[in-house]
Image (spheres, rainbow, N blue to C red):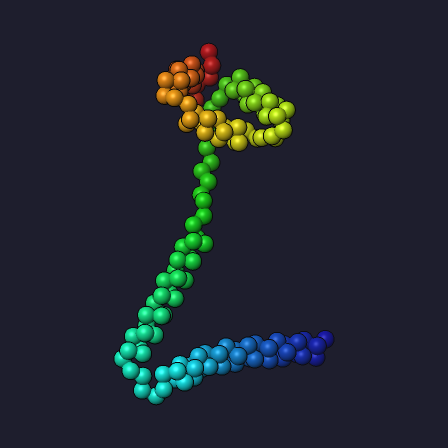
Amino acid sequence: MTKNFDEKLKTSLDAEKKTSQDKFKKTFDKFDKAEQVLGDNPTQEQLSEIVQRLSKTEQQLEEQKKKKSKKVKFIRLTFSAYPDIYDLLNECQSRSAKAGQISNYSELIRGGLKALLVIPEKELTEILKSVKIIRRGKKEE
């Protein structure tokens, strides 16, 4: 068993060494290519052109990182509601299911909010006045 372990360890170390050498070689290949392009004594114009190219590349990389890192954050909301609100949600669920659109509570609430945004202010205020106010932490009397 010790032989087998020693062989596996040696194989692993050899593979890691080869990978390190390949990375090291690639780095020096980049320098060799730069020297081939620029020669031994690059002019100031050549150097400034390279700096501009590198800065553009860095800016592009930063923009790509920003695009990737922009994740939508969800906010978990909880609210109190009387049982009749859940009855209304269930009624809306069954109504949307009959229409061929299966929806959960969250989708129904978000759809309702979108619908409230498109109605005129007068209708909106009438609807909001008809909604019963629920005091936080209070039970219905």
